[in-house]
Image 1 (cartoon, rainbow, N blue to C red):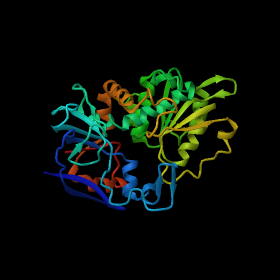
Image 2 (cartoon, rainbow, N blue to C red):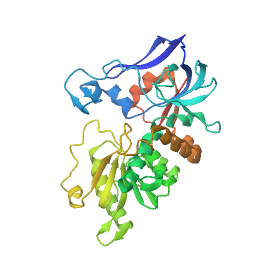
Image 3 (spheres, helix red, strand yellow):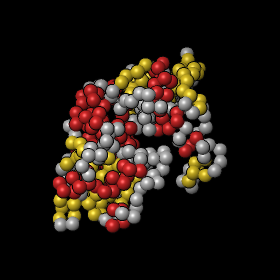
Image 4 (cartoon, rainbow, N blue to C red):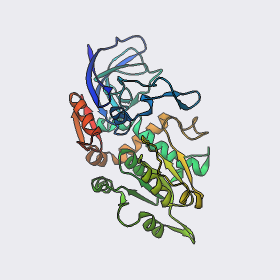
Amino acid sequence: MRDRIVAVTGPGRVELIEQDAAPLTEGTFRVETLYSGVSAGTELSFVKGTNPYLNVAWNADLGLFQPGAASTPYPVTRLGYMQVGRVVESATPAVAVGTVGAMTYGHRTGYLADPLTERFVPLPDDLDPVLGVYAAHMGPICANGVLHAAADLYGADVRSLGDGVRGRRVAVVGSGVVALLTALFAQRHGAASVVVLDPTPQRRAVAEALGLQTLDPEADDPAVVLKTRWAHAPGDRGADVVFQCRGQAWAMHLALRLLRPQGTVIDLAFYQAGADAVRFGEEFHHNGLSVRCAQIGRVPRGLAPTWDRERLSAETIDLLHAYGELIRKHLITALVPLDDAPDLLTDLATRRRQELQVVLTC
């Protein structure tokens, strides 16, 4: 038995390679891939050659990028983290044959897993399995952003994912997958208002189809619009919290301008080119603002015992139950056979093709 794997062998070079399937051993289980979602940010950074792991060494102990051999050199053979597979063999009582679950093993037709070292999120029978691409990692990324907003208010005393958004005015900059799922989490958990800002009309149309309000940041000044609309007290206007989900400097600058004084930007973006144009001498300084990075590698300080990745996946499945039909109809814009992945990824990286969410099928 052989597995087909999507690999990036160099900048702009994506190939399908074959590898002998690992044999089943005691305590392991094998899945056959059903669906594999494409992450347009992280994955395309490897195709374009802009991911920092390709060029420098990541020192995990120090938390620093340093000169040295690349931490993830080419070829990159574990690409992607949004897989759904069916268990076809099992040598562990922890995982039953026939179970459909979400995992993070990269674009490939099959995978041998160890339940002691890798997460397997069983999907409910009443959930469309294609939606499971969000359950293991992408949904928790967004849920963790909302969790950071809660921690910003309550520290380690967060009881509900909605603690940071309930009854509050929320702005979301960007309307990619991370932004739209984050906006839906905020709406699901009781935000008084949720407004998505993106300059692309097609992306705003998707947000509106999901039931979200939108603004065009290139039309009337959205900071003036929202600060006029969202009044708290004299001299106190704007969003209670902004989720910044677009990895560009202008987007961070906009996020800061939308905030009320002493508000917080929860930043979920990946700035592949840095953010040299962010102007910290203006609204950031004069309004006493804060920026919190919500990176999936860690939940807010003090919350790890109660808000682990499993709980964030459970929150994601709840969201998918609530909005699954809309997400399937409007967010997932293309199903593409795995065999077509090399052309697809290079077309996405060079912008010859634009999709919101592509899911590879096996």
